[in-house]
Image (cartoon, rainbow, N blue to C red; front, side, top):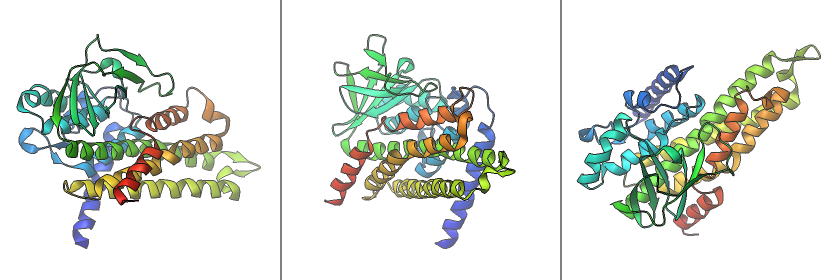
Amino acid sequence: MADDIGQDSVDLALLREAAREFLNGRVGQGSVKELAAMDWTGLLVEEDLGGSGWRPVETTIIAEELARAQNTSTWFGCVLSAAALNSAPEEFRDRWLPAMIDGTATAGCAVAGDTVRVVHGDALDILITLGSNGIHLVEVSDALPKSRDDELLDLGRAAWRVEIAGADSVLIGEPQRADQLLAVARVLLSADSLGALSATFERLVGYLKGRIAFGVPIASFQAVQHRLVDLLVFEAKARAIIMKAARALTDQKSNDAVALAATAHAYVTANATAAVDECMQLSGGIGFTWEYPLHHELRRVFTNGFMLGTARASRALVAERSGW
């Protein structure tokens, strides 16, 4: 068992390294077609349907690396929609799944409601909602009421409110499957926030090592070091709980996966924005400049905190699943 875990860790490290190399400095971070060419849109789809199998751990690593690279594509919605279509009625599966896997169509994924929040809501072909009534597919048309969500701050991945109360929808999955995919969505969104923080923190450490004050690097000051250690501890804890939830999701019959995913989402959502803001404070004046990537990462993490429910909602789910 130990050897299997060790080999698994090596394989995942290679995947992370390869993904980072592919995404590093890449132009056109808003295109999902290039990601589809890497087989990253079918990571939760059965192999006989053109996917890579059920791989939530690998998908989580890709989600983190995409956020590190400030990717602004609809990958999140496409990979989850592909997973939902994997078990959909044949008519809708054959119509939409190939387009999800090859990146020729765009999709959003949201918690079910009369009005939902999705990224790039103005450019979607389909919308998948996950809730207690199962998984529903809505074909997005120009007639569907939608508006830019000005309460959220992400400029690269603009959030939209889409009203679907009166829209025609098709049931493509049962409630149990919806719970499972919503758990995966929470883990991927948490990994996205972690990736943004990880990139911010890495850049901050380099900045503080090179910036000189009173003849020495700023990073040598004990007060600064303590704050950096707090950030490092949060990053390590967040990655540990996210990966534990992702591994639990590998077993599609796991009774703990939904609660672990909600725990990861609650922890990251409650703390990630403050952690990136701490990086901004430690960066000094440069952290506020428009050209510097830090404020984009802060906007991204802040927006993530509202896309699949709040930290409080996830805590309530953990309590419910734990019988509290």
